[in-house]
Image (cartoon, rainbow, N blue to C red; front, top):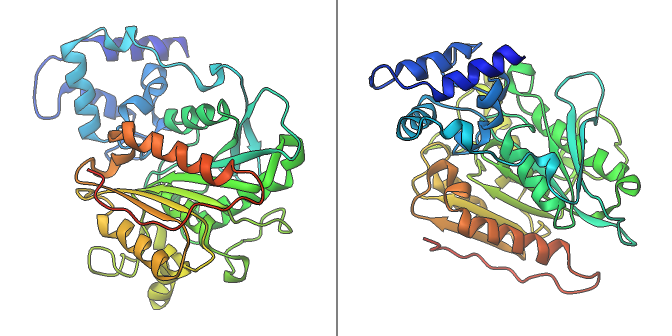
Length: 376
């Protein structure tokens, strides 16, 4: 471990030997790409590269692309000691927060784990509101341990929420639809089943996710038990629905993905005969209803990974269904990582959203429906 750490420090501080489009340093980093897919996940990194994974994962999708590694290389050229001198506080060191790592929400698979972030102070009578954080990564990459998915729940725990950050089966682990939905629903049921011990109010749970995680938290907000997507997990007597959803760069309609049916691969891989039905069942827009919980959607017009229309159609479908509180934050730029690219606006908006919806006193009127566009 010490050798690996020293090696990572050397890699992060050594000057580049030449300046090709893909530098020698980037090529060196990519040697740890175990599955040769051209990107690095947190499990394929070590030392400082792992510690600062989130900082370099600019779009928060759980992987470091050649472009992101190239940008890291460029920053190190400008300040070769950058990787040594700058430090981000670990989530576990956030003042007033206790972290319980790798809680098993279902036995039998290594991905069926979550991390709990608790305020250290005693919970008030009735419990605290809760938040569920679901990482992105195209349903094939990502981890609850990636910096953003640890630092964000720690930040909210410090604000008085009980938080969990969830792992779920990825496509390479058998996590094609509906397994990934089964998993996050199971995690929410576990959360509720343990509400007394965690000081959680089970009637006030929200969720945030980005990209693939945004798809999954949208399903947590919309898909009821009768849809048959609970799976065969634990705590089936508990509800898996959440009461508020914030989702950024959200895949919402697999029936019309870039004007065509989403391919029969990746998260939707399966028999061709049922491909169309599977795409419909996996789409959050299918479940839009008048009783949908409040939604805060964030999307950029120049998102080339998940088209802007995916966020827009979900907002419009929810509004048309009579949902009472829907907000779409629309940005001209920011790309697929818009939530972090526009963090001066998005962080504050999400904090205000969850505070209004989940922290209000029982019996008060929830915020009225609104769909707003034009947040540049």
